[in-house]
Length: 298
Ligand code: FAD
Image (cartoon, rainbow, N blue to C red; front, side, top):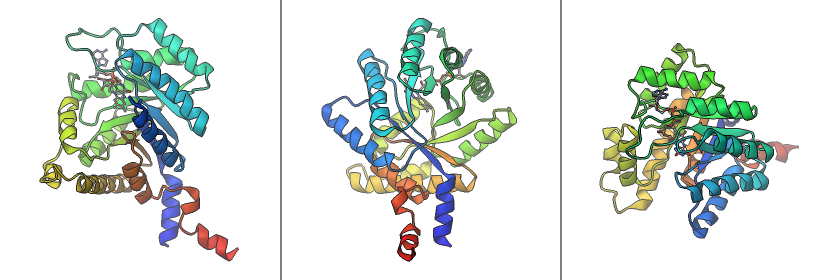
């Protein structure tokens, strides 16, 4: 029965993995090792983030094409519309379309300090992309509200606008308070947002860095989590195990609440995301429990 449950779970769960463009050749090696390992799990798609400076942006374009060539996976570049003209964005989108890229994660991007109201929001980018080609489009969602939003309600209406413009799914900012995700999902349904709200799972191993990042992004780090990492500042090994266990608990609750799609912020490392997927029943085909038995008896 356990094997059957796992097989059922695996049939139900879809995962995707997010990477960022490596800055050194050593980081590039780590990235490819991670991609090779995680691609065994047959993700629905993999994505590569888009940076603020032009060198990094070029790397997103080339890495996404390399991943597609090497793995054949649905490879989705992130694209932001701050500090780019509509003409530039159209040219990038056309180039992707011609290269066989059919999925884009469409974002506004963070505003440079001191800038005024941006001329484009993510919803405008979604509309622009849809004019270039019938892309599969993912957009960002914020269970704990985007830091610049006037209110939770206006942020939700913005998400609806992105979906109405043609977005096919929303991927959430990372979170640790599962309740805030579940309430947000309910509010999306009540607002008429009918796409999947895919939880973005961040397996934490560097808690200090997380605290800084959480403050910037308006994400709540619950007290219980601070306590879990307390005393581990100089113990990376234990931090990793604690981080994995927190994420495993989260995905277990979420899957019990009917979540079928999970997006992992891998930080270019396979280990934690792979282990969490394993507990969700997402495994390479050959390692599916029960299969060796079937083969042995055949
Ligand atoms: P939008 O949906 O445009 O919303 C931005 C803010 O403006 C919100 O507060 C919204 O409520 C408000 N708003 C929207 N429309 C209006 C309007 N007409 N008038 C007034 N206010 C309005 N950043 C990167 O630079 N590169 C990446 O690769 C990247 N990947 C990401 C992936 C995910 C899954 C997530 C969740 C975020 C990612 N980000 C990335 C961060 C993202 O760019 C920032 O959070 C950015 O500040 C907002 O982007 P958005 O697409 O959500 O913007």
